[in-house]
Length: 69
Image 1 (tube, one colour):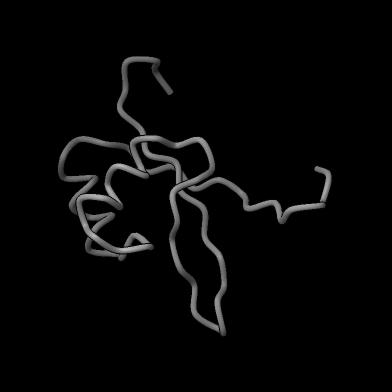
Image 2 (cartoon, helix red, strand yellow; image 1 turned 60 degrees about the vertical axis):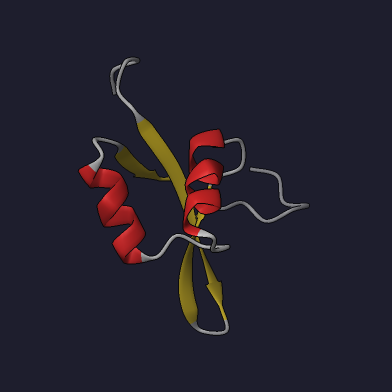
């Protein structure tokens, strides 16, 4: 990945059997997209729009609190 490339890092969490996309911890751009959408998660259509704006969406692993990786 190039350093000049725009990226949004997300993580998926399963909530009551449904997968939800959240901005990865420390991803300020992802948090700003949540502010724009007015939601607490990024929906598939949000991710499509983010890609359409020229951002690369990168999925990172979710590490629960208290677990060392």
